[in-house]
Image 1 (cartoon, protein in one colour):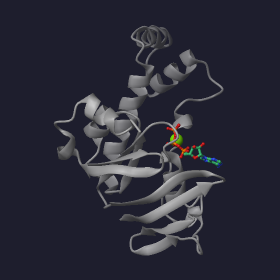
Image 2 (tube, rainbow, N blue to C red):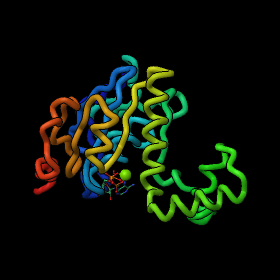
Image 3 (cartoon, rainbow, N blue to C red):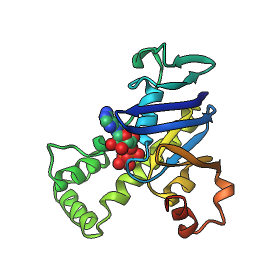
Image 4 (cartoon, rainbow, N blue to C red):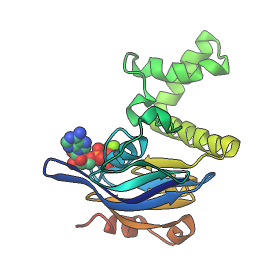
Length: 196
Ligand SMILES: Nc1ncnc2c1ncn2[C@@H]1O[C@H](COP(=O)(O)OP(=O)(O)OP(=O)(O)O)[C@@H](O)[C@H]1O
Ligand SMILES: [Mg+2]
């Protein structure tokens, strides 16, 4: 169980995270959504112990692991953090990155080259990686009953994957609720959270 209680983090004059509270039980997937710079990564880094909060606490399975005065090292937390930017190999070309994901499927060399071309023609590199990440997240939940926090900008992806959602803007959690609460939302309703 991950329990975040009224957590805040400031960098200089920027209030990156402001009084955020949330909880994620084992076997639950929570999606955190919001525009660039709203504090999603900072929130994850606070949970992982990579940042020290200015106020508030992080509790893991009932133990306080982060507060202003006390911070347990990241390695002691039994958490995994997958960074967005590592979804692609920086030393490979686009073609090589796509081919790499096919390696496990035992395509022949020419079959692989053909498949890479098809994939790139469909312009679906993002979709492919996204689907792979979503499949992996669901598999982890099923196999290990982990508490999972998934960061995205995409409402569709969030509602496909998550049991509950938190929407952030300017460092604050401006909405939180269950997937069912979002069923009647349009893209416009969702975007209204960011018009301020
Ligand atoms: N180490 C840091 N030093 C100074 N400012 C920082 C630092 N880390 C984050 N910030 C600032 O805090 C705010 C929140 O950043 P954060 O990276 O958490 O946003 P984000 O929601 O993850 O954005 P994105 O969707 O682009 O990944 C931003 O204004 C960012 O510039
Ligand atoms: Mg980020």
